[in-house]
Picture 1 (cartoon, one colour):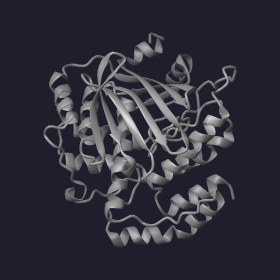
Picture 2: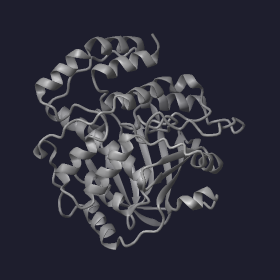
Picture 3: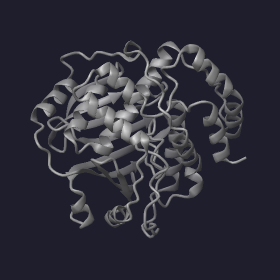
Picture 4: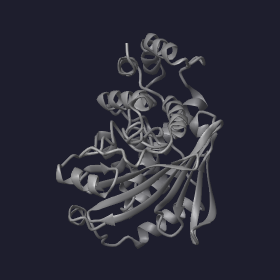
Length: 364
């Protein structure tokens, strides 16, 4: 039985929980650091296999050729990414949003003085007719101080996601209409758009439900799913050498997992569609509802920024993630993931608003 079989069986009977993806990403990041950067001579395929799924993957479980958020680097040996890719494929195959809970179960009201809420309001107030019809992101993945890969992603207003390892492969993906978008992408971006001006309690549920979960089902329904998945979990844990027993989260542990999914899916939407000011405003409002998130004024590259830190509680009690955004526009600048004993993972972003026609013509 290989990794794909194990992961598929596990996901058939119980959703993977955010901290399980986080553990997989931690192992992946360490392996990538040991393997070193992608060799410059390694050829890229016509359309880079960037994805079995997304960007952040709780921290991202969705983009197949991922960095610290779940991306398996192009040119890195297939063995390093096997489990992550298998998980991503299986997750997409079982992606069914759960029914929303009553708003009170996910309700968090941010303080009116929240820096994130203030910035979101400023962005919304200045949002006029925006140029372009797509958001372009260029991401540098750095692990342990080494540049591992560069990622080009284009998310169109119509919901298409094109990816490549350089300008040419991105242009090829667009020319071949090789969209890698899935339902989770669309739901996350739609939830962020709603959050820009909508009810935040409802927006939290919508964003959390962008990816599969059982968070808002009744205790009895969740327990039934959990018990059904016991055998598959045990096989997977034994195969992967996981010693710590997995317990069905309740109470604060459940809220921490909801907040993890909220953080991951929101920052995914920011990365994919961050060129759209409405999406940025919605994401900032959503992040303001997570109690374990702190915000501080900072300066990056001579520009005023906000440093947004999601503490260990958001990531299963270990490590943290620091997202830096421009203090005027809300555009993402960088993200740093830290886990004890593992090289720090850094993503440096260059996000802009573009037209699909310009990308097709190579004007970027």
